[in-house]
Figure 1 (cartoon, helix red, strand yellow):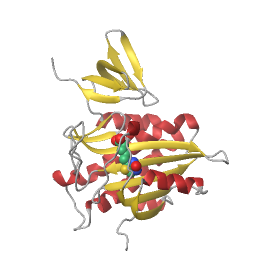
Figure 2: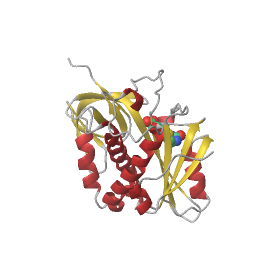
Figure 3: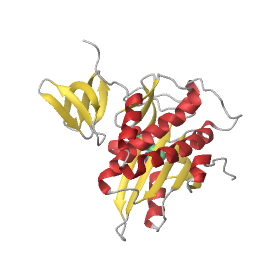
Length: 263
Ligand code: BTN
């Protein structure tokens, strides 16, 4: 089958390459395999369908055809301490790529750490995985799933899809996932350059905060065995969430954010 997927111009200019597959377990696994096999990095793996798609915190990512499943492989993209920042680079890139389709829309936001929301419903998710290969190089895989034609109905949170959002500047009648990927690959290449191996994470953070959902609002952080309430103040210079509560500020490294109902 001829693939319709293609890299955007900025991605091509920055020497990214693309592998397209029809059905995989998970594009993150495929990208990881390429990394372990000695790939030099800057490789996107895109699939039409995943049968073992996974999300953050061990969750399943429902992956029928019609949505975008894409993972980008980077090898030793920065010092280890900066690698978690890549989730934010991808979050900003994904928000900008969606913005290219739905317009500069205040209804589009990023929920910490990096879920894309439209009108409060989840449109896309990001899963960053890293490992070290035998030659000591670090493999980073950033997997991005965008609900293009459909969204799952059985989620514990509201979800949506591009198909339900009026979009602008459509490029003919090509599949939404193809258009989305072209924008995503270019936006990612552009923001990766801005990031500059972490030297400019401050710029990523500033852009992320412009998209931030629930900033200044009362939220609950749900973790395995606890729930912490507070006001979402900001994210710090490492992308950690700063939560202000009665006992002062807490630094949150992981968890799920839920908006609290007004009192
Ligand atoms: C989340 O919000 O929990 C993260 C979802 C990440 C899903 C994408 S789809 C492409 C890549 N392959 C996977 O198995 N997961 C990521």
